[in-house]
Amino acid sequence: MNTFPSDYDSAPCVLAPINVRIVPYVAGALAKYEKPAAWATFDDYRAGYNAIAEVQACMTALCARDLVQAQERLYRLLDTALLGTAYSVTGTDPDTLEPIISPPIPDVPATTAVLPGLVQRVARLEALLDNAYNGTLYLEYDQTPSLRQELENIRTQLAQLNTELDTKGELDDDMLIELGKVVLALA
Amino acid sequence: MITKQPFILFVVEDASGSRDQMHIFVDRTASIADIEAAAADFRSGFAAVSDARIVKQQFMFPAVEVPPPEPSAATLHAHAGVFIFRCANDEYAVVALPALNPARLMPDGLHIDQADPDIAAFVAACVAQGWSNPFGMDMLELATAYLQHRP
Image 1 (cartoon, chains in turn brown, cyan):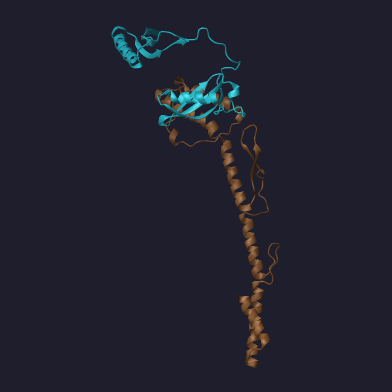
Image 2: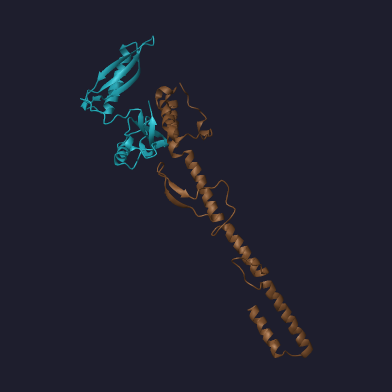
């Protein structure tokens, strides 16, 4: 005769993966604990019956596959957000009737990233800034001259204007044209 | 189905630990409450005149199929469809249906197809008829249903 554990509610659970093909046998073997004869008292019987029934419910409703699938969903979320990998449902598993999702999760994460992944987006922003400020050429960003070069050109032209004013006391037409260019560049 | 006379089964035990049974037949139109009251009166009367003690009683409402129908297929009774219901008071009820027709299973060979109209009707009947678990807690909803081998 079995007595139901008094510390059942505070005791932890264990995860015991069971091959789905033998679930009917393992679950069926628990049936003897649904009977009063398996327990020492009525209270033991009631607690034991409900605990065993809950285990049987969990054997299909909360199986290890659900936990693995939840982790795979989380991986795909991060993979799409960070690396831009696009996942899609490409069919239905004829055995489990669950969706087949492609591409399969790789053993190691990809070393390349594409849009709209965060990694690629940050890389493009970095390239944009580098091209615009430093003039470094990228496939997507090839603006020349750079802002740094433009500022240097403006500084040089302003220095020339200053020299012209010091020597002539006035600006000639050519220098006015150059000054107009500076104003346009700053606009 | 032929319904036979209901009766109360009393299991009695003497000082040596030896047990015997008594059958007291009751009116088939009597209510459960009336039968319980009658059984209580009987136990009092029994204690006054017998040196044995009553250790168990059961209300029996027997009925038999005459003639019994043929099984619809060769499925063994151990091939059971097990329906686990959530009940009031956070309890459960386990209903094991012997010899589940294999056609009622999902393609995975484990889960019972709850979309099957006959299965859905069976589940609805379990909930709607006020059935309970062994502790009187009403079945509220189906938690899961799958195949078990219950030899």
